[in-house]
Image (cartoon, rainbow over all chains, first blue to last red; front, side):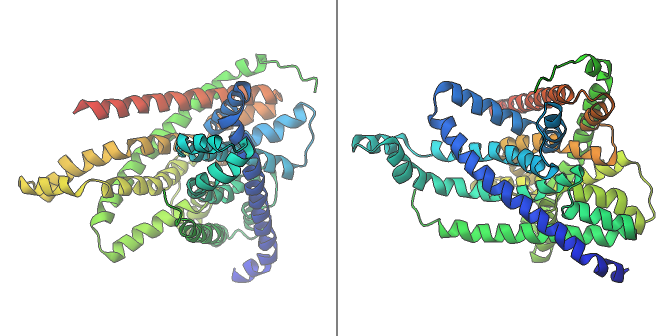
Length: 216
Length: 221
């Protein structure tokens, strides 16, 4: 039994690497898109605000699994062909983007209005107000929920196994298909996911402490 | 592009979606009910327990919260029967999994609520001679409920959406119904539009109902 699992380890390691790669892509892409749309939601013109609001409320209101299937099966139907890997990354990124938008909105809303007005009074431009006044203060509010969301991204990435992408989850299922050693492999998989996410949450606590010195 | 929407086939198989939605709700309600019991018992135990018990409860919570639900669903349905001599349906298996999963999230919610109950209230309870049990039932739990309800509502909605994972072990809930129509009729965009609307309407209706409960609870006493 252990021999068979040891034999499968390189294969599992590849799956594990893919899980990390998908998660990293999703986290980075959604951070960029989320900040852009989040600024659009807070400061944009009304039509843009509505569009982002509808997008965010819709995407956050349905299961990620439905979103993944919608993107994966729906896009080819309307003539957009993406590799399953990128379809999966796109679906997970859409979901995460909606969350990042909300974290950003919440963080910016927590900054007293006087800050923005004072910045205007001393003649800062919109961009200067954001970079020197609002974002440095909002950052500390943004960080804790966003970091919590990173572990969600790793967990959510396990759903891409359903599109036949050989991530850790799928690799485990394939090895079980060959060896019939279901329990040891699921436990191994659970420990690997746990290891990554627990390490992430420990790291995040330290990061939060690092930024905790900024006073209210 | 050039895709023409045609919902006829969706309506013809709508019973798959409607039945699916009802099953999704049923799975959510049963799992959450069991999860609430797990969560309450462990949270009350946690705040008054010694180090060892706290360590065990915290390990349960941390483990479940850091592992993907889909893996737990597979583990319970395909893994567990290989080591213990038990046979159960996919549906039972999923309810058990989601109950244990929601329990871990609810322990956290209830624990932080219990710890937020003002010390003075508990002391006041002691002062008027309430027993520890009476303090728990008449002072700590009601106050905790009021503190945790908003967080609780969000957890419930999120757990309702998690029932979609039951589709991976062929439990015929809403997402499974969507996939069935997807593969059998190829009206792909239509079916996911309808299912998206169904999840949204149900989710927001639940949220609205829970907000009413919150408001009622805030003003009732």
